[in-house]
Image 1 (cartoon, rainbow, N blue to C red):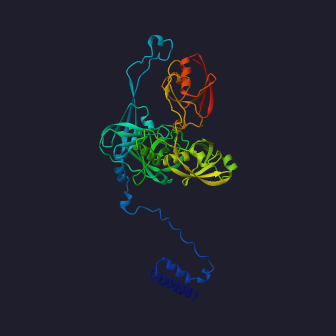
Image 2: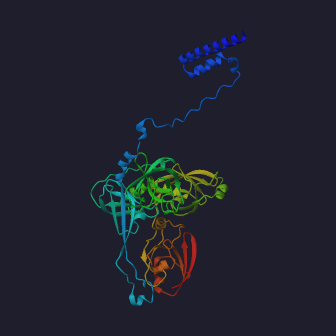
Image 3: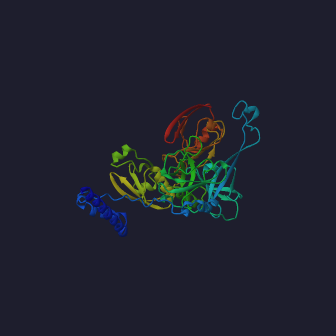
Length: 501
């Protein structure tokens, strides 16, 4: 009898459960079923149990593609719109081969300074970007440096001769003008200051001369400094593949705007390893604006002050939470900084609201603003922050450069020297503010090069006599002599040389 009652109870329980399932399906599915079961089969016990944790929700930004159309998304429309504005740049230089006896005082008596064989042609290949419908092309300065002939090939196969209308070695940029009256598809500039790390970008260029190639990647980092590329220190880093031949090509965003000029890679093998650097478009646009205005050299604003990085020790002594800003090292008494009240020891923290993390960032901001503008600097001075309004001016040429090629028999033969001025110091990126004489360039294979001299060397003294002007150097060079004692300032470091010539 007991066994029969248990069997009937089980049957009734199953019937009740089936009815509950049907009711739950009508009421709203599995969740209603669970609630009914909790209420009907042990609600008193469930009241003591903690409420179940809510189910985790998937992030709304991540989802699988919805339909075949999204699976087939492509960069192709963007490439078709922008690729015609990216060109190939071919630069050729004729090099005369020197005689093996050239430079030897004994053999030159018989053979003279002769050249052997026909000129040899050295060529280089790079990329460029059309930035003006009138045929202005931007590329890297190192692509066309020293070239006697520059040709530009468009994506459709047409080729044009071109001329250099502006170049800047410090930024490693050059602007070319195509020798034609045609109009061309120009790539619009984007605002590189709006880029964020992680943004998608495309790199377009001609790597290894294989033809126009597009690679994709992201912005890996911003404001990269001290990468060993020219004197420019504010690069965009990307992992889009950049290889030899890509130099001068375009880095574009997803709106088809130019956000950078591809310039260099970090590589031990010579190929792309996912670390490439591009010059921000805001810097490129500043150079193009001056070229369109008729300038033949890029002119940066002059503050009349020199700066150095803030080290952790300096930051601690000044009460800064971390190393940041540009520390004023020296102020020209007649420059804009002195007139605005900037003093040595002050730290520039921002310019027009843009944070300044290091001197390279300050130089970049100034270059993109341009001369003849008024800016506001946020400065930490004597433990207090204050605002300094300063008018950016053009570096003055307080005396003529008087560039002169030194000839004759001396350690300076083959060197071009010039009188220093704030304008020349700025152009050559030389520290300090004293006058003197600087070597601006040296002919290849000249005695000055063999003597160990370099462009940028400031000649302070010759044979113990102070050098003030170019005429002083010419006088010593014409006087000749066998023994020479030189005092050279090389990027702020004094070098004494003893030569027998």
